[in-house]
Image 1 (tube, rainbow, N blue to C red):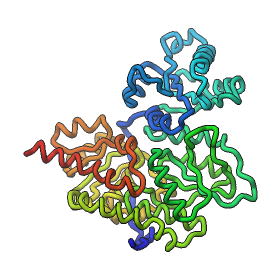
Image 2: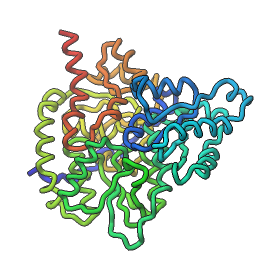
Image 3: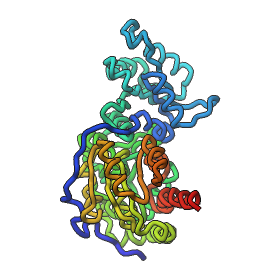
Image 4: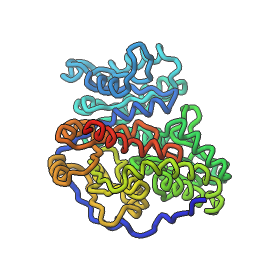
Length: 427
């Protein structure tokens, strides 16, 4: 049985200086989050109020066939709307009316703001309130911003769940403590965690977002909040305002991270470490065995993280501690010190940390360091590949199920494959 490793083995990078940069950025917008959100929430529809560029972005990212019936669409703002010659609120009402007549299966409709809708100051909160009054209770209508003007792409999920949090039912006051796992997880990952929690003896747990909007979890003072994603700052605040208490924990990436995440959940619910260790031991052992060949391929390799998804710190911790990689620089769009305290404590002391982006300066540092692997967005990957560097698309780390024991080797494989490909091309 694997030993229980304390989260705070040393201070790591808890008090490490952080280089804060504000300059040109290379990121996707929050509309990208619709791709994994609409797969999770099976009766929700995402109506983007934006331009044809917005429509092409979401369509391309989703890879939906033209004859499919996806649960997202774009209400196109054309020249008349942008010039103020049409009443955009009336136009939006007509679009929603046609949509709901065609799709009676919709129970939750999100109006998603974009850069164009925000530029013309289209008040989607007002539209959502008006439409919700008209169509509720058959359809609940909410709104959030997916604009990329000031945010990175994973914040689309944060904005969506923060908008949905006030809609959660109130938990009864005398209720027993209940675990609420927050963050969009693939169904297979959610099922795996459900089995592990049941084996631990946890009887009351729920996931947010839930698969259907008609079965939203309750929240209240006895809710114990466990984040599954590090980019949910607004969502966590909204749930804490409802009385939920956040459980400090690293994120469930890799064998070690997943074990510590479940140990933190167990401790918050009154379980002893031994009980949790026995329940998760078989899954953890499988994960550690599956990681061994990846460690042999990655140990001693140097990796550079450009800021993109806010997953960078947990990923860097996983690569350094479980796979033996050396961290040249770990950049992240935003460093939430409270939510990432456990991850910072686990990073190797002396790790170079950067928050925000000034892409030209970061490119200069990356070129000077010549790391073995660069984790970055699509906009930087091809130019760096042309310069002879090996890259990993950071967006793939969000689209792929990577949480939990059973996915630990899959996560490691996302980093070994680019290096293997480079070796084959050089042969």
